[in-house]
Length: 254
Image (cartoon, rainbow, N blue to C red; front, side, top):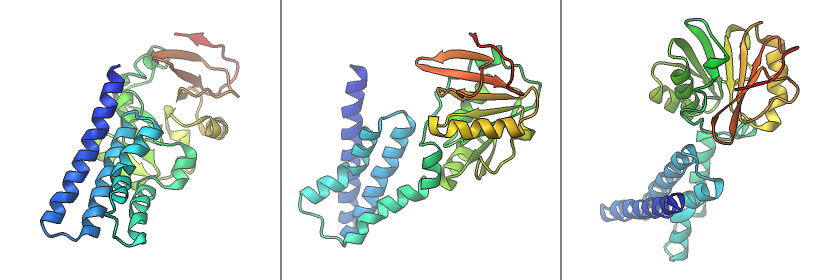
């Protein structure tokens, strides 16, 4: 029930705030087209934030489209047609299609990795890679699990990498392609990808990761490998642990 209450209130707050922004800008003498663009962009940013907080795709889309749809239904849409493309361009800039094919924005719950150190023991100042770090949620969870490590994040989306740098100033965050980065330098590689990209991740890990290093995947199993251990720190989100060279291990449930 609490989730249902939070959802309508969140939507009403975003839509009301965006409409207030639009009316305020128009009152200040801003042209309606420009005010509409700013208001729609604000709704898109609010929707992206909600997505990071775990909102569903449908609710995220509703947050983003609430203002422009209501704007059009009220007969106020007297702006050029191309203006409506600008919010879509903004979304593509924030999260390009290349990154979307690898993994949509999946935020890692803060405590999802808290049980990993019980099995994957790392040396001091170990190098831990969050491959596809998004806005930095995975880096925060890794820091909570391994307080004496070096945390590295790679994110294809430049705006998200900027956000991750801002949220995680203690980590090294780079804008780049996780598939072009060599994983041999890391003691642990953390993934929260999607099932379709896991086979590619497995092949890369087998080819590049050094003996003793750990491949850790939240929620999605590397079906080609036998897991060293599986943890259940987060409800319905198992964490799969694999230790290189990824052969001969038996699965242990923690």
